[in-house]
Amino acid sequence: MTKFSIILLVFFMAFCSSNKRTYNIKPTKSIVNPDNELLEANAVAYHLNDTLTQVYLQIINENLVYKRADTTTAFYAEVKVFYKLLADEYSKKIIDSGSYFLVDRAEDKVVEKGLNSKFKIKCKEGSNYYLEVFIFDLNKKIKHLKAISINKKDKLNEQNFLVTCNNNVAYKANFLAGQEVEIKTSHTNFSSFYVDCFKKEFGPALPPFSLKPTDPYKYKPDSSFAITPSSNIINLKMPERGFYHIRLKDYSNEGLTLFTYDETYPGVSNSAEMIYCTRYIMNKQEFEECKSATDSKASIDKFWIALAGSNDRAKELLKRYYGRVKEANKYYASYAEGWKSDRGMIYIIYGKPTNVYKNYNSETWVYGIETNPASIRYIFKKAENPFSNNDFILERSQFFKDAWYTAVDYWRQGRVYTSALHER
Image (cartoon, rainbow, N blue to C red; front, side, top):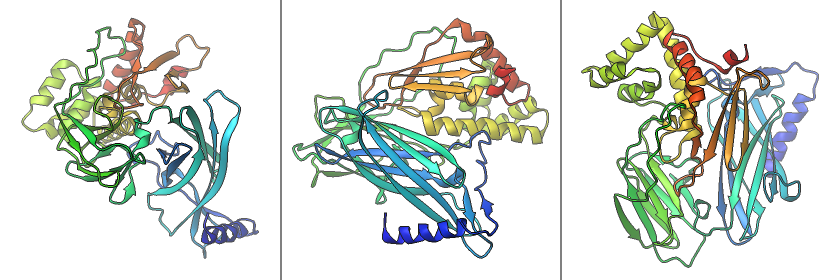
């Protein structure tokens, strides 16, 4: 923490402890997804050497609360970050820990941005660890947990690379076509970076009751090339579509994956993409008609107005549905956009789960009260592939058919389906 930050924090706390009235300001709730009030945090781990790892943390201020002591002072958000490193998520033994404060100043209007910081953790090569980062919004009095798996068993995994774009750490792996990225590694004993290019397009997830077998995974790039690094750094221009997989050894598939997405990602870019995202609630005939329409925008607008019954209700329905698409893209993307994933599909149709239980290899989403027989539990198992640690596959069952069609029919009646409907 810098000397200036300490002075600023003391100054701010002095105002808060005064007897003057406190004024609050909060950034506008997400325009595209009114359901979401969670604090968004991104983190990247980069192994500096055999014993130290640098963690870069970004806190999006959209749902932070900004306060000021009176109308003569600026608004401030105050955050405390506390982290602890464990051998695994069930361990009670703390291997390393620390804490620090972040203070952000704003004028009359809070502009959405990321609050960036970094810290080092002591973790030795040859083991895996579990890092818990607790983010306290001291004005709002809430706590958010960001958990990160630290992999130091494998010298070739993505945490051995640091990606920057426009001189900023890249917290996400998605970039624009033609964008320049810089990739570096702390390992000095590799003479080449091997880059595989993939251009395959992936379709939307199958319904949760579908028992159709998935195609077996095959690592087969469309093209490949090697780059000799300069001081362990390479520069890459992102392809027009698809993704790159960067490796340090030509015989290992472990490495770093970078994706090309549209400029509006994680939002929906155009009417054609809107049609594909809406496939989950369209029947086959509606989907084919929209897809083949001369005017795709007019076609998808007509679909939503027909469901909603009026232009105003259609606008609200559009905002909520594609807001969930955007959230799915933000949190569930792997080698394909998040809305195409199993978790993305369930999130879009059902909304935020009532409860979520996570461990390293699985997630269980509960919709409804745990003891209610009508509640639904979706179990997602982590898939093993070299492109992403964020790929989870739903355990499908015919049992989900009735609940799925009930939720889809709710949307088709012009109403937003939420997890609260399972609690009745």
